[in-house]
Length: 306
Ligand code: MG
Ligand code: MG
Ligand code: MG
Image 1 (cartoon, rainbow, N blue to C red):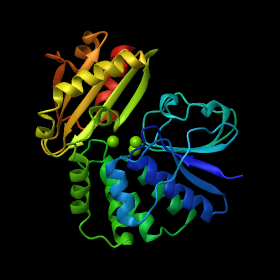
Image 2: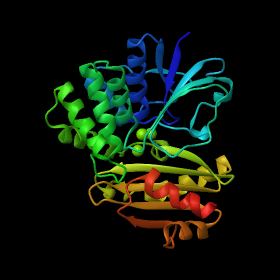
Image 3: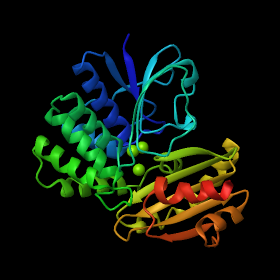
Image 4: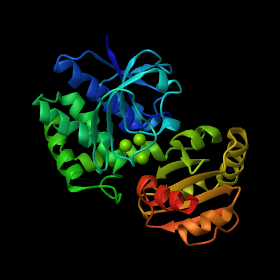
């Protein structure tokens, strides 16, 4: 029986590249594994796959009765809908521990580093398996994406060392240049439907019984949003109603200025004020130095809900 290796819903580069890299490793050590995904690759992920000659993993939404290896999340809201009917055989993640539990023993690779793929590299080292050039390339790009080319406060020396090692294997000298190319692809939002932008990197969280959706768009210049900001704000209001959510936040992150403008729609704006110690104005809040959803946005909000 093959195990499926799958990242979170609304997959990002870490989820998709991680699934491919883990599945390859598992097959090398004699465990049959197949990479899968829970949604369409983003333009950034497609750029990475094309660059290193990979097809996107199989789109598979249902896992009842299957063995599943989970990548880049442990939140049930982000996992396959029928994960409770699957056997979770392993987890690789770098987020706060979520609410996913298992009924059988499992393999856990969880570290507070900037990217799941940094942990995947540790797995290759542990099993002493050589990383092929093309897999090194996609792993490296996933780390550059998750760490915002090392600018994110989630970035650790382990991530930097890992990128250096992978760049060497992949034969890429100017990896920071490649990272910038990736973020340029990410910044091309013109002509994309507003809902697609809102959902591009969107995650739901269960915060003390309240469903909170938080999206993020990382670009090299926030000016790309000037003409569509009102539409984005209107769309997150719709999304909140559709999903019965308590709040929906959309982070417009400027990776050069190193801060985020947060668009907010909430049943209780006071909780946002409490979390970030600043009051939104007209549903907007500038958060200086904020680049990371997992480290700078989710924890204070979770605390405010507690
Ligand atoms: Mg992710
Ligand atoms: Mg990640
Ligand atoms: Mg991210």
